[in-house]
Length: 223
Image 1 (tube, rainbow, N blue to C red):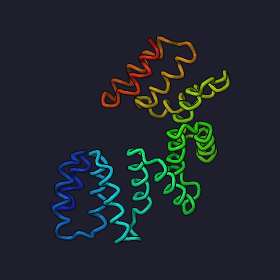
Image 2: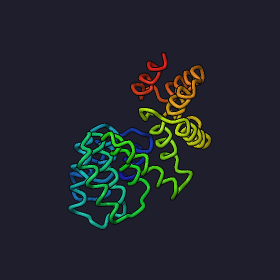
Image 3: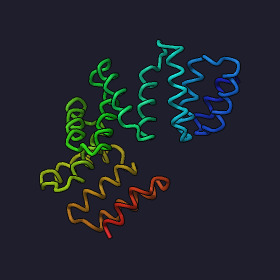
Image 4: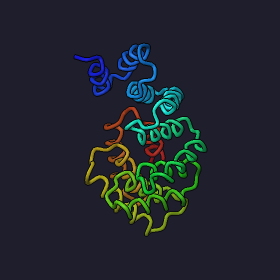
């Protein structure tokens, strides 16, 4: 089996730390190989080293402007800046890429997420509405829009009804998604369905025990 297949196999098995070591070894022989650098960045991201992920991808861009995964390179850079809470940098790169890829749904989703993190909820809501005009079954926006409508300071009855519609649609295609279940719990609570909300939150915790902080916050608000 080739060494490339070895590290790809480990990535596919989610053994990112091992794959990272294997790729580092290969890079000593071929330090400008764009495929190695890209996969190294993925491993850095998945092991939480977002600063190194950005550094590696910036290095890749210097060597290979025509790399076949160029859109994913920029998406991963943006994602890493978001994880580091470098929202201004993430927004600048997102807007530059949107000039090239107008209507790119992942980029628009990133922009909406940045707006949310900057407490610009109305802007985030508008972006997700526009995404759903392009692709009505785009699950990320169905969930995000439902959540944003629900967490407004004073959501109207219409907002709550709309949020309920969107999150049910997202769950219909991915019923075990912890994030969707969490949003469903938030919407159920607004509808006064405390017991159902509790079940949704508990199910979300069971599906993603490693991502408990936000779900637990919502549970605490329910009690």
